[in-house]
Image (tube, rainbow, N blue to C red; front, side, top):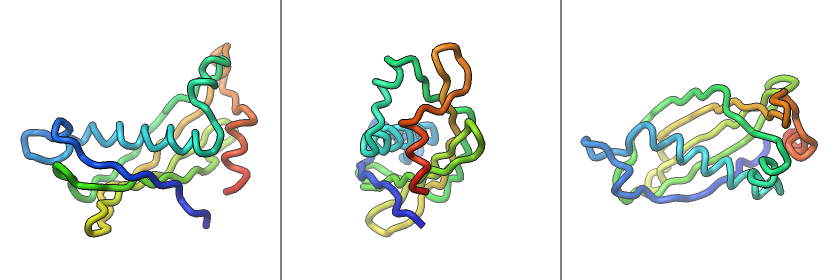
Length: 133
């Protein structure tokens, strides 16, 4: 099994809801940021793809919330990829609270790429993400 990509972040006060925990919608931002950093680390520039007419899009998200993060908590977001079909791929992601190693969230974000005509198309720069799986 390949080693997941990992970034570390910290909860900011404005990400909390009235209960004093990270709002469930904020986790989508954490996961997206980690995916973009993962792509950059693999030499895939999300913005450059868009300029070239290739658009990476999310078609489905499945998130399982296991615990809560609070203000100031440091956490890691892990990312691995997998091929799910001819033109679909998945990002398996996990949010882990650093002080106790507790898994806070597990998710699968399914995506595809669209060419300039809006047709599914997996560019070679995206295809390489699955060669190492």
